[in-house]
Length: 136
Image (cartoon, rainbow, N blue to C red; front, side, top):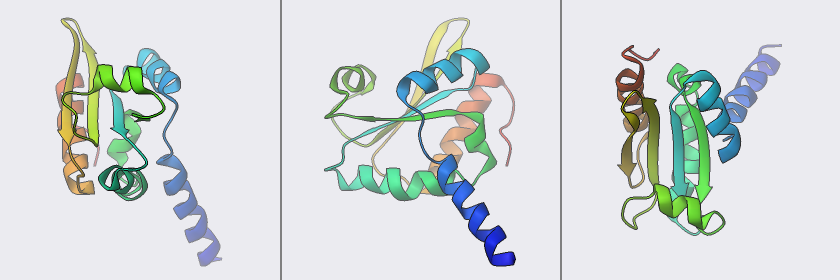
């Protein structure tokens, strides 16, 4: 029984790290005001693959992940929009957008990051966007 519960919990954690499509994440941002978090990368990039398959699923276990609308853009498949969001040519880039009275604001992490660094980045961005400290 315990094994089944743990398996279900692990599956939920893995599925919650599954990104929304860009359109879904943008819509969630518009409806809820959650910051839009975009991981920009490519399948041929080792750091991008690490972020997508290891770091972000680990981050999804933290409650802060539920306070953002998360999506992934592939620079090879979604070139135009990825280039608009990127700053410089380095990937991966994790960009957090939030709307303010003054317009869209953003913060960014460049390069492969640890789950701890990503969680700190998200908490800082949520605090800037909402004025509230993100959940632990």
